[in-house]
Structure formats: C-alpha cells, structure tokens
Length: 215
Ligand code: AMP
Image (cartoon, rainbow, N blue to C red; front, side, top):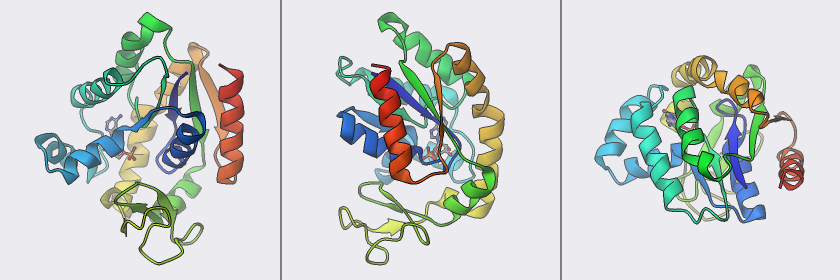
C-alpha cells in the first residue's frame, strides 16, 4: 500500500497521516518534518531549507526529491508507506512515479479538500508539539495544559510559516505549483477526493475505508 496525502496547507494531512499510519501500521513520512528535523540539528540542509520555509516558498525540487527518495529507500518496501506533503510539484510527482514504477506505482492519492477561508482560520491558530509533531488548535482543539502536548509532554509552538504573511504565500504556492497534481493523478485514476471539512474522526474513517477497499 503506497499512499500519498495531497491537499492545501491546513487541510489536515499531518493529523490524518499520524492516525492512518498508526491504524494501518504503515511507515509514514512528512517532507516538512524531515526539513524541520534538519533545522533542529542545524545541518547544512536544514539551514538551506529554512531560508525557503520561513517565507512560505517551496524548497527546490532537486534537494527535496533527493531527501524523500533517501527516506523511501531506507524503508522495507514490502509494507508500503504513506507520504505527507510530497510530492508538491509536477517534477516531484514524476520523480516519484519513476522511482515506484518498477513495483506497480502508487496505490492511492488522497486529496483532502478544504475551503481557503477555513484553511486560514486553522493555520492561524495552529500549535505544534516540538517533540512528536502532534498538532493542536488554540480554539478548536486546545491542549489540556496551555503550551504542553497532551500526548508526550513536549513544548507547543507556532511555526514561523503559520504567521499571516507566510500563510498567504503558502496558499498561493499551493495553487500555482501543487494544484496541477490533482489533474495529474486524476488522469492515472489514482485520485480519491475526501471532504476535509468534517470532524477529524469522520475524515479518518472515510480514508481508512478507501484504503481498505483499494488493497
Ligand atoms: P509542511 O510541514 O508540509 O506544511 O511543509 C512546510 C514547508 O516545508 C513548506 O512550506 C515548504 O517550504 C517545505 N516543504 C515541505 N514539503 C515540501 C516539498 N515536497 N517540496 C518543497 N518544499 C517542501
């Protein structure tokens, strides 16, 4: 089972990726988390990625493709995997298709759809755990104790790129560079649309049901 989660920033890809990977025992990776891990460790790649991420731009394709392919190649491919936030450009999608074509390609691309007004509201109030990356929201999903992750006790923070100017840019970048992937995957009949504007558990159940049927 090789699955891609596609959708605008704030659609809930990260939240669903954690839940689905746990439920289906699938290895998962978020390209954004890989970059943030590099930043935490202050590597050359982390410093380079930061200059793009902080202003809401995409990290160049060559760097991103290499990083994600390295992750894929360290996995036990017999289990499959879940990709959150990759691919985000046609070039990335083509690189992924090329890499996976030998053993059947992707099974499903889940496109989580949410309206722009809702995305802005979600991103503006989002808090993330520094340790386990679990997302919270100051109004709709606050932690039990302010600033502390319910799951692991890690510190919660607001991502630089969740601040208003970067959010605007990320939504533009999504519309220009990532939205064309919807047509790309629709053409190959891999695309499954999910309405992301419902309760997290309802979205999760629908995704699980799609993935179970497409096995
Ligand atoms: P995310 O955590 O998925 O919202 O990603 C945060 C930021 O990381 C994005 O705004 C980009 O700057 C960078 N990033 C994550 N995934 C990719 C990707 N597939 N291609 C290019 N940049 C990416």
